Image (cartoon, rainbow, N blue to C red; front, side):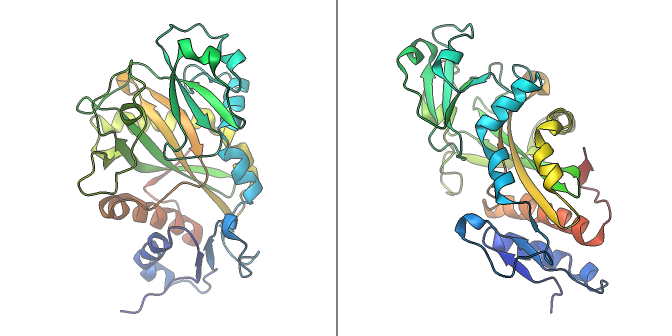
Length: 306
Protein backbone atom coordinates (compact mmCIF):
# COMPACT_ATOMS: atom_id res chain seq x y z
CA UNK A 1 0.00 0.00 0.00
CA UNK A 2 1.27 3.46 -0.89
CA UNK A 3 1.04 5.94 1.96
CA UNK A 4 0.46 9.62 1.28
CA UNK A 5 2.02 11.99 3.76
CA UNK A 6 4.15 15.15 3.81
CA UNK A 7 7.88 15.32 3.30
CA UNK A 8 9.51 14.77 6.71
CA UNK A 9 12.75 16.28 7.98
CA UNK A 10 13.57 14.66 11.31
CA UNK A 11 16.69 13.82 13.26
CA UNK A 12 14.85 12.71 16.38
CA UNK A 13 12.11 10.09 16.79
CA UNK A 14 12.08 9.66 13.00
CA UNK A 15 10.35 6.28 13.05
CA UNK A 16 7.71 7.59 15.47
CA UNK A 17 7.01 10.56 13.19
CA UNK A 18 6.72 8.40 10.08
CA UNK A 19 4.46 5.84 11.76
CA UNK A 20 2.19 8.64 12.94
CA UNK A 21 2.15 10.10 9.42
CA UNK A 22 1.10 6.74 7.96
CA UNK A 23 -1.83 6.58 10.36
CA UNK A 24 -3.08 9.88 8.89
CA UNK A 25 -2.49 8.91 5.27
CA UNK A 26 -6.18 8.71 4.33
CA UNK A 27 -6.84 12.19 5.72
CA UNK A 28 -3.76 13.58 3.99
CA UNK A 29 -5.05 12.24 0.66
CA UNK A 30 -7.94 14.73 0.88
CA UNK A 31 -5.67 17.78 1.19
CA UNK A 32 -4.55 19.83 -1.79
CA UNK A 33 -1.24 20.87 -0.27
CA UNK A 34 0.92 19.03 2.23
CA UNK A 35 3.33 21.42 3.87
CA UNK A 36 6.58 19.60 4.79
CA UNK A 37 7.05 18.74 8.46
CA UNK A 38 10.22 19.10 10.51
CA UNK A 39 11.16 17.66 13.87
CA UNK A 40 14.73 18.79 13.65
CA UNK A 41 16.99 19.50 16.64
CA UNK A 42 19.54 22.10 15.54
CA UNK A 43 21.93 20.85 18.23
CA UNK A 44 23.06 18.48 15.47
CA UNK A 45 23.25 21.29 12.91
CA UNK A 46 20.74 23.10 10.68
CA UNK A 47 18.92 21.43 7.80
CA UNK A 48 18.94 23.61 4.65
CA UNK A 49 15.38 22.61 3.71
CA UNK A 50 13.86 23.57 7.06
CA UNK A 51 12.62 27.07 6.31
CA UNK A 52 9.49 29.20 6.52
CA UNK A 53 7.62 26.84 4.19
CA UNK A 54 7.88 24.00 6.72
CA UNK A 55 6.06 23.16 9.95
CA UNK A 56 8.93 23.43 12.41
CA UNK A 57 9.90 23.82 16.04
CA UNK A 58 10.10 27.25 17.65
CA UNK A 59 13.61 28.64 17.82
CA UNK A 60 16.26 26.69 19.67
CA UNK A 61 16.99 29.70 21.89
CA UNK A 62 13.42 29.61 23.24
CA UNK A 63 13.49 25.83 23.69
CA UNK A 64 16.77 26.04 25.60
CA UNK A 65 15.51 28.84 27.82
CA UNK A 66 12.42 26.92 28.97
CA UNK A 67 14.33 23.62 29.23
CA UNK A 68 16.61 25.02 31.93
CA UNK A 69 15.72 23.90 35.43
CA UNK A 70 16.80 27.31 36.66
CA UNK A 71 14.09 28.86 34.49
CA UNK A 72 11.44 26.71 36.19
CA UNK A 73 12.86 27.56 39.62
CA UNK A 74 12.75 31.32 38.99
CA UNK A 75 9.33 31.33 37.36
CA UNK A 76 7.78 29.17 40.09
CA UNK A 77 9.05 31.61 42.70
CA UNK A 78 7.79 34.60 40.70
CA UNK A 79 4.32 33.12 40.38
CA UNK A 80 4.10 31.87 43.97
CA UNK A 81 3.85 28.21 42.89
CA UNK A 82 6.85 26.99 44.85
CA UNK A 83 6.11 24.63 47.71
CA UNK A 84 2.68 23.47 46.58
CA UNK A 85 2.90 22.79 42.82
CA UNK A 86 6.67 22.92 42.23
CA UNK A 87 9.16 21.70 44.88
CA UNK A 88 11.24 24.26 46.75
CA UNK A 89 14.38 24.74 44.68
CA UNK A 90 17.45 26.92 45.00
CA UNK A 91 20.42 28.05 42.96
CA UNK A 92 22.89 28.18 45.87
CA UNK A 93 23.62 26.32 49.09
CA UNK A 94 23.19 29.54 51.05
CA UNK A 95 19.64 29.95 49.73
CA UNK A 96 18.83 26.30 50.43
CA UNK A 97 19.92 26.67 54.04
CA UNK A 98 17.28 29.36 54.58
CA UNK A 99 14.60 26.66 54.28
CA UNK A 100 13.84 24.93 57.56
CA UNK A 101 14.63 21.22 57.10
CA UNK A 102 15.37 18.22 59.32
CA UNK A 103 18.92 16.90 59.25
CA UNK A 104 17.88 13.70 57.46
CA UNK A 105 15.74 15.40 54.80
CA UNK A 106 16.97 14.87 51.26
CA UNK A 107 17.94 17.29 48.52
CA UNK A 108 18.35 16.46 44.86
CA UNK A 109 21.28 18.18 43.17
CA UNK A 110 20.39 18.47 39.49
CA UNK A 111 22.19 19.81 36.42
CA UNK A 112 20.25 22.64 34.80
CA UNK A 113 20.29 20.92 31.41
CA UNK A 114 19.86 17.18 31.67
CA UNK A 115 17.12 14.59 31.58
CA UNK A 116 16.59 10.92 32.32
CA UNK A 117 18.10 11.28 35.80
CA UNK A 118 21.58 11.91 34.44
CA UNK A 119 23.88 13.81 36.80
CA UNK A 120 21.47 13.85 39.76
CA UNK A 121 22.82 13.28 43.27
CA UNK A 122 20.89 12.75 46.51
CA UNK A 123 22.23 14.58 49.57
CA UNK A 124 21.12 14.72 53.21
CA UNK A 125 20.32 18.19 54.53
CA UNK A 126 23.02 17.86 57.20
CA UNK A 127 25.63 17.50 54.44
CA UNK A 128 24.77 20.43 52.20
CA UNK A 129 26.73 22.84 54.42
CA UNK A 130 29.91 21.32 52.96
CA UNK A 131 28.56 21.07 49.43
CA UNK A 132 30.21 22.95 46.59
CA UNK A 133 27.28 23.37 44.23
CA UNK A 134 28.66 23.20 40.66
CA UNK A 135 27.82 25.88 38.15
CA UNK A 136 24.57 25.29 36.25
CA UNK A 137 23.07 23.11 39.00
CA UNK A 138 20.14 23.50 41.38
CA UNK A 139 19.11 21.99 44.71
CA UNK A 140 15.53 20.68 44.83
CA UNK A 141 13.73 19.39 47.91
CA UNK A 142 12.45 15.86 48.13
CA UNK A 143 8.71 15.47 47.73
CA UNK A 144 7.14 13.64 50.65
CA UNK A 145 3.91 11.65 50.92
CA UNK A 146 4.49 10.05 47.52
CA UNK A 147 2.08 7.61 45.97
CA UNK A 148 3.97 4.37 45.38
CA UNK A 149 3.36 1.44 43.04
CA UNK A 150 4.01 -1.89 44.73
CA UNK A 151 6.27 -0.09 47.21
CA UNK A 152 8.30 1.62 44.50
CA UNK A 153 8.68 5.28 43.58
CA UNK A 154 7.60 6.29 40.11
CA UNK A 155 7.99 9.39 37.98
CA UNK A 156 5.32 10.41 35.47
CA UNK A 157 5.57 12.45 32.30
CA UNK A 158 2.74 14.39 30.66
CA UNK A 159 2.88 15.27 26.95
CA UNK A 160 2.15 18.87 25.98
CA UNK A 161 1.87 20.44 22.52
CA UNK A 162 2.15 24.21 21.97
CA UNK A 163 0.91 25.52 18.63
CA UNK A 164 -0.47 28.78 17.25
CA UNK A 165 -0.57 30.48 20.70
CA UNK A 166 -2.44 27.58 22.29
CA UNK A 167 -1.45 24.85 24.76
CA UNK A 168 -2.75 21.29 24.50
CA UNK A 169 -2.23 18.31 26.79
CA UNK A 170 -2.45 14.74 25.54
CA UNK A 171 -4.75 12.42 27.48
CA UNK A 172 -1.95 10.01 28.35
CA UNK A 173 1.71 9.93 29.28
CA UNK A 174 4.15 7.47 30.74
CA UNK A 175 5.43 6.42 34.14
CA UNK A 176 8.88 5.07 35.05
CA UNK A 177 8.61 2.66 37.96
CA UNK A 178 11.88 2.37 39.85
CA UNK A 179 13.54 -1.00 40.20
CA UNK A 180 14.00 -1.25 43.97
CA UNK A 181 11.68 -0.65 46.94
CA UNK A 182 11.41 2.96 48.03
CA UNK A 183 12.81 4.27 51.29
CA UNK A 184 12.09 7.97 51.81
CA UNK A 185 15.10 8.31 54.13
CA UNK A 186 17.55 6.72 51.67
CA UNK A 187 19.92 8.55 49.33
CA UNK A 188 20.23 5.39 47.20
CA UNK A 189 20.25 6.46 43.55
CA UNK A 190 18.40 3.31 42.45
CA UNK A 191 15.51 3.93 44.83
CA UNK A 192 15.26 7.68 44.32
CA UNK A 193 16.24 8.39 40.70
CA UNK A 194 17.51 5.60 38.47
CA UNK A 195 15.49 4.29 35.54
CA UNK A 196 18.31 3.62 33.09
CA UNK A 197 17.43 0.04 32.16
CA UNK A 198 13.75 0.57 31.31
CA UNK A 199 14.33 -0.59 27.73
CA UNK A 200 15.85 -3.93 28.78
CA UNK A 201 13.35 -6.82 28.73
CA UNK A 202 14.85 -8.21 31.94
CA UNK A 203 15.53 -4.81 33.54
CA UNK A 204 14.31 -3.89 37.01
CA UNK A 205 12.80 -0.57 35.89
CA UNK A 206 9.38 -0.84 34.25
CA UNK A 207 7.38 1.52 32.07
CA UNK A 208 3.63 1.94 31.96
CA UNK A 209 1.21 4.61 30.77
CA UNK A 210 -0.68 7.11 32.88
CA UNK A 211 -3.85 5.33 31.83
CA UNK A 212 -2.55 2.19 33.56
CA UNK A 213 -2.40 3.95 36.94
CA UNK A 214 -5.06 3.54 39.64
CA UNK A 215 -7.61 6.37 39.69
CA UNK A 216 -6.51 7.53 36.23
CA UNK A 217 -9.46 9.94 35.63
CA UNK A 218 -8.61 11.89 38.77
CA UNK A 219 -4.91 11.86 37.92
CA UNK A 220 -5.32 13.23 34.40
CA UNK A 221 -7.68 15.91 35.76
CA UNK A 222 -4.98 16.90 38.28
CA UNK A 223 -2.45 17.12 35.47
CA UNK A 224 -4.70 19.39 33.40
CA UNK A 225 -5.20 21.63 36.44
CA UNK A 226 -1.46 21.76 37.15
CA UNK A 227 -0.61 22.66 33.55
CA UNK A 228 -3.21 25.42 33.62
CA UNK A 229 -1.45 26.85 36.69
CA UNK A 230 1.99 26.77 35.07
CA UNK A 231 0.75 28.10 31.73
CA UNK A 232 2.35 31.51 32.41
CA UNK A 233 5.72 29.71 32.67
CA UNK A 234 5.17 28.40 29.15
CA UNK A 235 4.62 31.91 27.79
CA UNK A 236 7.95 32.07 25.88
CA UNK A 237 6.91 28.97 23.93
CA UNK A 238 3.36 30.24 23.44
CA UNK A 239 4.59 33.60 22.15
CA UNK A 240 7.10 31.95 19.79
CA UNK A 241 4.49 29.56 18.37
CA UNK A 242 2.53 30.34 15.22
CA UNK A 243 0.38 28.59 12.59
CA UNK A 244 3.65 27.02 11.38
CA UNK A 245 5.79 26.75 14.51
CA UNK A 246 5.25 24.45 17.47
CA UNK A 247 6.87 23.00 20.61
CA UNK A 248 6.64 19.65 22.36
CA UNK A 249 7.12 19.46 26.13
CA UNK A 250 7.56 16.48 28.39
CA UNK A 251 6.48 17.62 31.85
CA UNK A 252 7.94 15.44 34.58
CA UNK A 253 5.87 15.15 37.73
CA UNK A 254 5.29 13.16 40.88
CA UNK A 255 1.98 12.14 42.42
CA UNK A 256 1.47 12.56 46.12
CA UNK A 257 -1.40 10.98 47.99
CA UNK A 258 -4.89 12.00 46.83
CA UNK A 259 -3.53 12.45 43.28
CA UNK A 260 -1.85 15.73 44.10
CA UNK A 261 0.68 16.76 41.42
CA UNK A 262 4.18 18.15 41.92
CA UNK A 263 5.91 19.34 38.76
CA UNK A 264 9.65 18.73 38.88
CA UNK A 265 10.96 19.42 35.34
CA UNK A 266 10.05 20.84 31.94
CA UNK A 267 11.72 19.05 29.03
CA UNK A 268 11.49 20.87 25.69
CA UNK A 269 13.76 18.28 24.05
CA UNK A 270 12.08 15.23 25.49
CA UNK A 271 12.77 11.70 24.31
CA UNK A 272 9.86 10.11 22.42
CA UNK A 273 11.44 6.73 21.72
CA UNK A 274 10.92 4.09 24.40
CA UNK A 275 9.88 0.46 24.54
CA UNK A 276 7.88 -0.97 21.63
CA UNK A 277 4.78 -1.10 23.82
CA UNK A 278 5.07 2.55 24.90
CA UNK A 279 5.89 3.65 21.35
CA UNK A 280 2.79 1.90 20.00
CA UNK A 281 0.39 2.81 22.80
CA UNK A 282 1.58 6.33 23.55
CA UNK A 283 4.24 7.98 21.39
CA UNK A 284 2.83 7.24 17.94
CA UNK A 285 -0.74 8.20 19.00
CA UNK A 286 0.55 11.46 20.51
CA UNK A 287 2.36 12.40 17.32
CA UNK A 288 -0.66 11.40 15.23
CA UNK A 289 -2.90 13.60 17.41
CA UNK A 290 -0.84 16.76 17.16
CA UNK A 291 -0.04 16.19 13.46
CA UNK A 292 -3.77 15.90 12.85
CA UNK A 293 -4.25 19.25 14.54
CA UNK A 294 -1.41 20.82 12.53
CA UNK A 295 -2.64 19.67 9.15
CA UNK A 296 -6.40 19.31 9.49
CA UNK A 297 -6.86 22.35 11.76
CA UNK A 298 -9.52 20.52 13.74
CA UNK A 299 -9.66 19.74 17.43
CA UNK A 300 -8.56 16.23 18.34
CA UNK A 301 -10.42 14.15 20.91
CA UNK A 302 -7.18 13.16 22.68
CA UNK A 303 -5.84 16.72 23.01
CA UNK A 304 -7.32 18.95 25.69
CA UNK A 305 -6.80 22.67 25.23
CA UNK A 306 -5.54 24.20 28.45
